[in-house]
Image 1 (tube, rainbow, N blue to C red):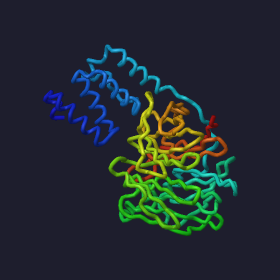
Image 2: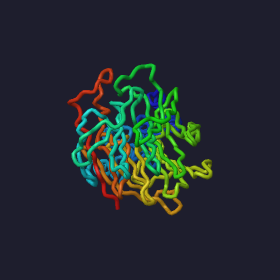
Image 3: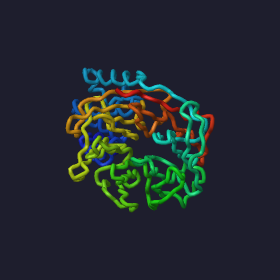
Image 4: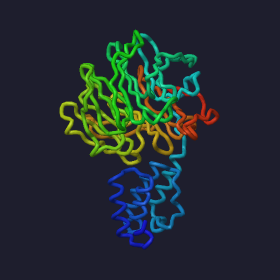
Length: 389
């Protein structure tokens, strides 16, 4: 800011470039980078970065900013203004199926157990797993335990004998205390007995967001607190991949069809594809023009596509990315849902019989002082369904 105020725009650009490389997709840094390019008369770069700003947040007001005066008569700048308006237009692809009966559940993920024909939902707030009737939305406690933390992801093994669950200590959960901060656990649960068989605890700075299970029963877990992936084999949990030098905030992960590749979302950088035989050959997917790498939470593989829940952008959108034959490039994309008023932080999703299911709303913004959940600030969790093509 000192460089900016003294009109040393060359230094301003150098510093903002450095900041953007250290912490990508930061709303202030990337906006300042666009301004720095414009002030240095590098119009092409300025427009390119300004487009990224709008794709991240179309509510950003830049039209009256004098830093961008040099751009305002260009056709590219007018295209960005048009893009900003287009992002306001709702795209309605999915439909509401039901509302859950338990309002303050604060669900994160859902899972269908096909053998027992039971729908489950995880709870951030109530520190439990519930089952729900897919016709009425009526909820019943499925697993409650005094030692449970906030429940995030749930996946069952191929035989549906065990349910694997990620849990983490969150200030939004009931009974949170400072001594629980940073703690997390992976749980192995006997589905038939509804009992925790094994706990895999971690202490430090962990938020275990999602997991996947391979055909041979190995479990892979993403940690957004430390930007690492854990692997559980034969009931032993170890660090599998340390991504701290290249990733920032790991989220959803998913296998491709034959499980030779693992895709993992980073909230700031996009999607990393990891070959299972040689993880060192991993690469970040390049996103096509008009798409943003920012804010992917849930990630689901479906028939050579990746379905991403972008909840860290404005407006929130669900996007289906079409992969090439080698599955290391994005060829094109389709926006499934965009700027829906019912969508206020959808998170993880699941595919059942060619249909995508997810909860459209979670009450993150309804927590006020001391993480009290203000009841009139949110509605009951809504389950949405999208028929995949």
